[in-house]
Length: 436
Ligand code: CMC
Image (cartoon, rainbow, N blue to C red; front, side, top):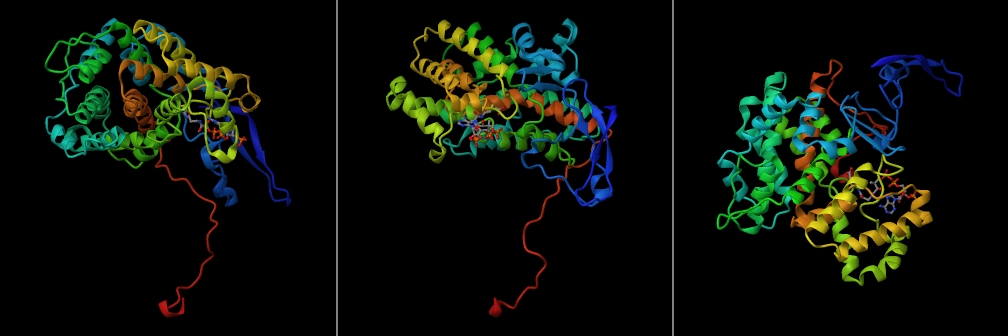
């Protein structure tokens, strides 16, 4: 963090003493006012529900410029990573700060590939769930449960332990997601196969059966790999902040990542891709493209409580760059699978066209986000809607673990402990039960 020449001055309208605060510059992006001494000097807190103006940490991993529609992992534009790198290269970059050279890539791929199997006891743990349980409920349990299986590497102060946990989490997440899916289908679990890529292996664990050979379709493999890259990190979003806050107490990495999975589940965050596809299917069932106008009127009517899922973003107020890449992938996959005339894709294009021309959306700077297209791609690949958020969790695991690692290595790291503006009762006395 670089101290700026400027200082911020806080003054009070009642003539109270003005106070100066240091200002820090980031490498790019907005400066921050360091208010850590505010309470000590004034006895006051800041009030910022939803963290609209609060930087909760310093981070060197991901940078987003919401106005420009720019997303960088470790300085590299998402467009270049999505076009030139595979997911594991991107994961290496996010974890280590630099892209791997050929030897480093081979070594990292080897480490991840050789940690993809899960302890056989995890099968019994999974079998305790109902078969119709939501995959995110199962995944939250399984990831948390890993802390009971891999407790030889949970010393969070030991960088070697942190590395082993990172590799285990990245490697085993696809196995767990595929197991959760197979269990829901009543099919046997498919063990990982080491001669396949990270994403090819996941596809095989999802869709192969012991009865016949499964051939990975390279277009599908590349599309899913791109979905993983686009979801790998997104700076201090709700689930990442949850992982940091949970991890700040010193809990073990699997517990912290399980908290991230739980947070991601919500429809305003990772659950949006599932909600988006459910919305498209509902419009389709109620008349399809002809009914888009009617649906949009409902979205604009605040009293209806209906939102256009897959639209809007807390940070991107121009365009979500991931949505552009996903739209392109969506076209490629539908073409490769002969689904160009897919009615849901046509419906989504029509929704997008109307929304981008409509004053309601233009004025509020609401654009399609990554989830608007990723659901259509996943559906075309054969992934059931209820598994979409689990795929997001699989991809985001590297971001969570890198952010957790960065937090623990930060000399300024402290347990997270927000404060509040108390609006409840002033102190009062407990009356005897008969007098209440
Ligand atoms: N449909 C209709 N109106 C919307 C939508 C939408 N999808 N999103 C925002 N608005 C309206 C909102 O009602 C508000 O209107 P007004 O100013 O009249 O009160 C205005 O736009 C500003 O929205 P906001 O809710 O204050 O914005 P936010 O930054 O708090 O919320 C959001 C961001 C993503 C939660 C929200 O846009 C939303 O719920 N979108 C749909 C869910 C979705 O697609 N989420 C995925 C996000 S991308 C994946 C990820 O990174 O997790």
